Amino acid sequence: MTCVRCGQSRAGFERAPFPGAIGTRIVAEICQDCWGQWVKQQTMLINHYGLNVMDPQARAFLTKNMQAFLFKTGAAEDVDTTKKGSINW
Ligand SMILES: [Zn+2]
Image: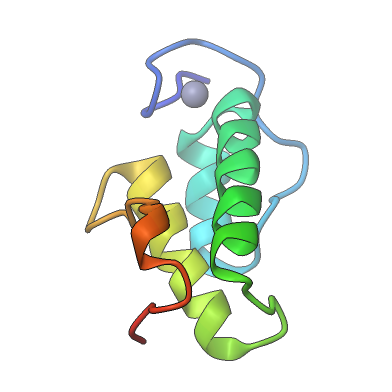
């Protein structure tokens, strides 16, 4: 498959790395390399904002950023250390 994010022909997924329609789209359009980059970015966001991944609001925030990161849709959160602890939901 050709990844829509990096434009490279790379191995896709055997199983969706994310549930639902978004996971289906990732399998169809995104390579494992780009997914790996998102996982690192996600870890950075979780650590930066001290997110609890069991919190639905935190999950919605990460999903929004994941779509922006992988599909370049919507606004990605800029990690700005001056805003630490002051995120507005
Ligand atoms: Zn890619």
